[in-house]
Length: 199
Ligand SMILES: N[C@@H](CCC(=O)N[C@@H](CS)C(=O)NCC(=O)O)C(=O)O
Image (cartoon, rainbow, N blue to C red):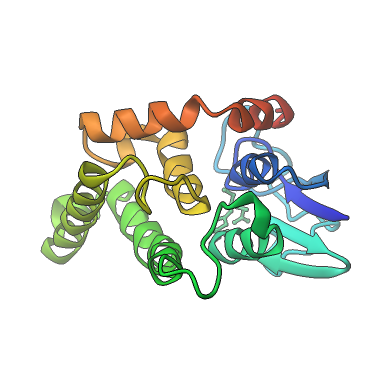
Protein backbone atom coordinates (compact mmCIF):
# COMPACT_ATOMS: atom_id res chain seq x y z
CA UNK A 1 0.00 0.00 0.00
CA UNK A 2 1.19 3.50 -0.82
CA UNK A 3 1.03 6.17 1.85
CA UNK A 4 0.99 9.84 0.93
CA UNK A 5 2.42 12.05 3.67
CA UNK A 6 0.17 15.05 3.33
CA UNK A 7 -0.68 18.44 4.76
CA UNK A 8 -3.89 20.08 3.55
CA UNK A 9 -3.56 22.81 0.92
CA UNK A 10 0.13 22.31 0.32
CA UNK A 11 2.41 20.82 -2.33
CA UNK A 12 1.14 17.37 -1.34
CA UNK A 13 -2.41 18.19 -2.52
CA UNK A 14 -1.15 17.69 -6.09
CA UNK A 15 -0.42 14.05 -5.25
CA UNK A 16 -3.93 13.40 -4.02
CA UNK A 17 -4.82 14.58 -7.52
CA UNK A 18 -2.24 12.37 -9.27
CA UNK A 19 -3.14 9.31 -7.19
CA UNK A 20 -6.81 9.85 -8.07
CA UNK A 21 -5.92 10.23 -11.75
CA UNK A 22 -3.96 6.97 -11.58
CA UNK A 23 -6.72 5.07 -9.80
CA UNK A 24 -4.04 3.89 -7.37
CA UNK A 25 -4.80 2.38 -3.97
CA UNK A 26 -3.36 4.64 -1.27
CA UNK A 27 -3.75 5.89 2.23
CA UNK A 28 -3.06 9.36 3.57
CA UNK A 29 -0.99 10.29 6.62
CA UNK A 30 -1.82 13.87 7.57
CA UNK A 31 1.09 15.64 9.25
CA UNK A 32 1.74 19.06 10.64
CA UNK A 33 4.25 21.25 8.78
CA UNK A 34 5.79 24.64 9.44
CA UNK A 35 3.66 27.30 7.76
CA UNK A 36 4.17 31.01 7.56
CA UNK A 37 0.71 31.81 8.88
CA UNK A 38 -3.00 31.56 8.22
CA UNK A 39 -5.65 29.23 9.61
CA UNK A 40 -3.61 26.09 8.85
CA UNK A 41 -0.47 27.37 10.56
CA UNK A 42 -0.37 24.46 13.02
CA UNK A 43 2.29 24.15 15.68
CA UNK A 44 5.12 25.46 13.52
CA UNK A 45 7.15 22.45 14.53
CA UNK A 46 8.34 19.48 12.55
CA UNK A 47 5.94 16.54 12.91
CA UNK A 48 7.89 13.65 14.47
CA UNK A 49 5.83 11.14 12.47
CA UNK A 50 6.89 12.65 9.16
CA UNK A 51 9.62 10.53 7.46
CA UNK A 52 10.54 13.27 4.94
CA UNK A 53 14.26 14.13 5.43
CA UNK A 54 13.37 17.80 6.06
CA UNK A 55 9.97 17.27 7.70
CA UNK A 56 8.25 18.61 4.59
CA UNK A 57 5.43 17.38 2.38
CA UNK A 58 4.93 15.71 0.01
CA UNK A 59 6.52 12.39 0.81
CA UNK A 60 5.42 9.02 -0.46
CA UNK A 61 6.02 5.75 1.35
CA UNK A 62 6.00 2.59 -0.73
CA UNK A 63 6.60 -0.63 1.12
CA UNK A 64 8.74 1.16 3.71
CA UNK A 65 10.74 3.19 1.18
CA UNK A 66 10.40 6.97 1.38
CA UNK A 67 10.34 9.03 -1.82
CA UNK A 68 10.56 12.82 -1.55
CA UNK A 69 10.62 15.80 -3.94
CA UNK A 70 7.59 16.47 -6.13
CA UNK A 71 9.29 15.74 -9.46
CA UNK A 72 10.63 12.41 -8.19
CA UNK A 73 7.26 11.40 -6.73
CA UNK A 74 5.49 12.26 -9.99
CA UNK A 75 7.89 10.14 -12.02
CA UNK A 76 7.83 7.30 -9.49
CA UNK A 77 4.05 7.12 -9.56
CA UNK A 78 3.57 7.36 -13.32
CA UNK A 79 6.19 4.63 -13.81
CA UNK A 80 4.56 2.46 -11.15
CA UNK A 81 1.13 2.71 -12.80
CA UNK A 82 2.05 2.62 -16.51
CA UNK A 83 -1.39 1.62 -17.76
CA UNK A 84 -2.87 4.92 -16.59
CA UNK A 85 -0.87 6.68 -19.32
CA UNK A 86 -0.05 9.74 -17.23
CA UNK A 87 3.67 9.79 -17.99
CA UNK A 88 5.52 8.52 -21.07
CA UNK A 89 7.57 5.39 -20.33
CA UNK A 90 11.12 4.45 -21.34
CA UNK A 91 11.10 3.90 -25.12
CA UNK A 92 8.35 6.45 -25.78
CA UNK A 93 9.65 9.45 -27.79
CA UNK A 94 7.89 11.69 -25.29
CA UNK A 95 9.94 10.28 -22.40
CA UNK A 96 12.72 12.83 -22.92
CA UNK A 97 10.38 15.84 -23.00
CA UNK A 98 8.55 14.45 -19.95
CA UNK A 99 11.78 14.16 -17.92
CA UNK A 100 12.86 17.59 -19.14
CA UNK A 101 9.64 19.21 -17.90
CA UNK A 102 9.78 17.43 -14.52
CA UNK A 103 13.37 18.58 -14.02
CA UNK A 104 12.50 22.06 -15.27
CA UNK A 105 9.75 22.27 -12.67
CA UNK A 106 12.15 21.39 -9.82
CA UNK A 107 15.31 23.06 -11.07
CA UNK A 108 13.97 26.21 -12.69
CA UNK A 109 10.35 26.99 -11.98
CA UNK A 110 10.48 26.58 -8.19
CA UNK A 111 13.49 28.89 -7.66
CA UNK A 112 12.35 31.38 -10.30
CA UNK A 113 8.88 31.67 -8.76
CA UNK A 114 10.28 31.96 -5.23
CA UNK A 115 12.52 34.81 -6.46
CA UNK A 116 9.49 36.40 -8.09
CA UNK A 117 7.50 36.30 -4.86
CA UNK A 118 10.45 37.74 -2.95
CA UNK A 119 10.35 40.71 -5.31
CA UNK A 120 13.68 39.93 -6.92
CA UNK A 121 12.29 40.00 -10.47
CA UNK A 122 11.57 43.67 -9.84
CA UNK A 123 15.09 44.49 -8.68
CA UNK A 124 17.48 42.02 -10.33
CA UNK A 125 17.92 41.89 -14.12
CA UNK A 126 19.04 38.25 -14.19
CA UNK A 127 16.07 37.09 -12.08
CA UNK A 128 13.72 39.15 -14.27
CA UNK A 129 15.16 37.57 -17.44
CA UNK A 130 14.74 34.06 -16.02
CA UNK A 131 11.14 34.78 -15.08
CA UNK A 132 10.39 36.17 -18.54
CA UNK A 133 12.03 33.16 -20.20
CA UNK A 134 9.92 30.79 -18.08
CA UNK A 135 6.76 32.70 -18.98
CA UNK A 136 7.65 32.69 -22.68
CA UNK A 137 8.51 28.99 -22.75
CA UNK A 138 5.27 27.99 -21.07
CA UNK A 139 3.17 30.24 -23.29
CA UNK A 140 4.83 28.96 -26.47
CA UNK A 141 4.26 25.37 -25.33
CA UNK A 142 0.60 25.93 -24.51
CA UNK A 143 -0.07 27.90 -27.70
CA UNK A 144 0.80 24.74 -29.63
CA UNK A 145 -1.30 22.25 -27.68
CA UNK A 146 -3.67 21.99 -24.71
CA UNK A 147 -1.20 20.23 -22.39
CA UNK A 148 2.52 20.45 -21.70
CA UNK A 149 3.31 17.28 -23.65
CA UNK A 150 0.85 17.98 -26.46
CA UNK A 151 -2.60 16.45 -26.81
CA UNK A 152 -2.22 14.23 -23.75
CA UNK A 153 -2.59 15.32 -20.13
CA UNK A 154 0.30 14.12 -17.94
CA UNK A 155 1.71 14.39 -14.44
CA UNK A 156 3.84 17.28 -15.72
CA UNK A 157 0.63 19.31 -16.08
CA UNK A 158 -0.22 18.46 -12.47
CA UNK A 159 3.09 19.85 -11.19
CA UNK A 160 2.80 23.12 -13.09
CA UNK A 161 -0.96 23.69 -12.84
CA UNK A 162 -0.99 23.03 -9.10
CA UNK A 163 1.21 26.09 -8.71
CA UNK A 164 -1.42 28.19 -10.51
CA UNK A 165 -4.19 26.65 -8.42
CA UNK A 166 -2.32 27.75 -5.33
CA UNK A 167 -1.20 31.16 -6.62
CA UNK A 168 -2.50 32.25 -10.03
CA UNK A 169 -0.43 35.43 -9.70
CA UNK A 170 2.76 33.36 -9.89
CA UNK A 171 2.57 33.84 -13.67
CA UNK A 172 1.48 36.98 -15.55
CA UNK A 173 -2.16 37.48 -16.58
CA UNK A 174 -2.85 35.65 -19.84
CA UNK A 175 -5.79 33.68 -21.26
CA UNK A 176 -3.48 30.78 -22.10
CA UNK A 177 -2.83 30.19 -18.41
CA UNK A 178 -6.46 30.74 -17.43
CA UNK A 179 -7.64 28.24 -20.05
CA UNK A 180 -5.03 25.66 -18.98
CA UNK A 181 -6.15 26.08 -15.39
CA UNK A 182 -9.82 25.75 -16.37
CA UNK A 183 -9.18 22.56 -18.39
CA UNK A 184 -7.29 21.04 -15.48
CA UNK A 185 -9.81 22.16 -12.87
CA UNK A 186 -12.59 20.38 -14.80
CA UNK A 187 -10.95 16.98 -14.34
CA UNK A 188 -13.06 14.69 -12.12
CA UNK A 189 -9.96 13.31 -10.37
CA UNK A 190 -9.08 16.80 -9.16
CA UNK A 191 -12.58 17.27 -7.76
CA UNK A 192 -12.25 13.95 -5.89
CA UNK A 193 -8.79 14.96 -4.62
CA UNK A 194 -9.99 18.30 -3.31
CA UNK A 195 -12.78 16.47 -1.48
CA UNK A 196 -10.05 14.52 0.36
CA UNK A 197 -7.78 17.50 0.97
CA UNK A 198 -9.54 18.27 4.28
CA UNK A 199 -8.31 21.33 6.02
N1 LIG B 1 11.11 20.77 -3.15
C1 LIG B 1 10.01 20.23 -2.37
C2 LIG B 1 9.36 21.38 -1.62
C3 LIG B 1 8.44 20.87 -0.54
C4 LIG B 1 7.90 22.01 0.31
O1 LIG B 1 8.43 23.15 0.32
N2 LIG B 1 6.83 21.71 1.05
C5 LIG B 1 6.26 22.67 1.96
C6 LIG B 1 4.73 22.62 1.90
S1 LIG B 1 4.07 23.26 0.39
C7 LIG B 1 6.63 22.27 3.39
O2 LIG B 1 6.59 21.11 3.73
N3 LIG B 1 6.98 23.27 4.21
C8 LIG B 1 7.33 23.04 5.59
C9 LIG B 1 8.81 23.18 5.83
O3 LIG B 1 9.55 23.60 4.91
O4 LIG B 1 9.24 22.87 6.95
C10 LIG B 1 9.01 19.52 -3.31
O5 LIG B 1 8.79 20.03 -4.43
O6 LIG B 1 8.44 18.50 -2.96
